[in-house]
Image 1 (cartoon, rainbow, N blue to C red):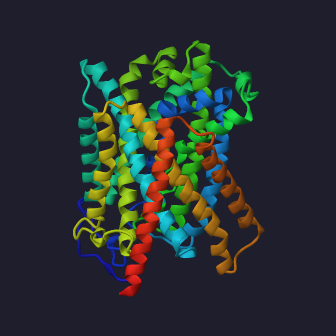
Image 2: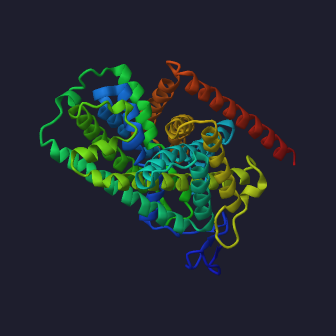
Image 3: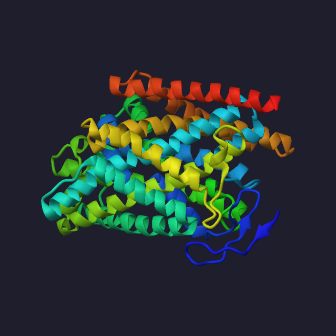
Length: 466
């Protein structure tokens, strides 16, 4: 593998270029690699947006839905980790799946993963718009256009992702540290205020049953999606065969404990205050108020803005690298395979990803959709893509080990358990049939996947004739 040291990154550091991909080799520390996965999760979205939605479905079983989601995603992380310990590629789950199933399944995994990252970036701009306007109203008594906020956010995220992957990682890391620290302070203060006793209703799952918890599980799983995105940095991470699988599993474990703690604290606090968590648009403000930390309200909003921005940046970074490999495999336009000669980033892929991330929330905001509507719709679309990708890679894992003569009962059980969880989550998200605004997204996803399949078949046939 040829390596070049003659260039300098935007950060001023020497570049080691992996000529097989053109990306900056070994640029990111283990912590910076972890930041990619944590940022894609957008941990602030859980307590600020998603836990109230999960509570509306699962009630006192909300924390249990998150426990099940933690188990499910740790199982998926175990499957991904098998591949990540054997190979490193910007293609992420697509490359893993295609290495086992190079035909239609492998190609479909590429399209599923691409829409997952793009739709997630679009979704979080909706959440960011909501909290940015809360902050602007609190500080200046004004509100800004959702289209304007989306344009500023996506443009800035695209510019950072275009410039230097190391700068991107450091921005994501700093923003998530600030956001998670603020939320953790409020959660701990709320739990301290309520004393050491346990909320019996929650632990006994009072009023909750299997059906509602199953529906809440879908929302809980969406809280985690993107945890695998460190795999897109397979070339750019230091010692990737060790740091990438660790980042994947650590991000799933961290998110699980964080979300369960937030879910328990929010349900307890809202019950004590006699407020309805399911209808709250700013649940952390109530927690801050009841613990005497209402002065932190602007900082909470700012932390949410930071976290949503870091997630958008992370998803643009990840989707551009998936596009890079898709282009080199003939699934996307050849120009998307180009890497910027100075920045060592997939510049054209970054720009296209930024445009695709901007258009849905901008159009929806222009048509009067709220930030929460955008977050819910685009987040659901992203979840279909992620779950599909997870199912493919979990099915592929034991086949991969079989070819290496390393298959045993344990990975078979790991694959089967994770596949069962993800399949159940996918079925639960489409049946019973959701309201019209969400059921149309199911149709949109299947139309998109069909279009990707037909295009892949055409591209494959065209390349085979040459």
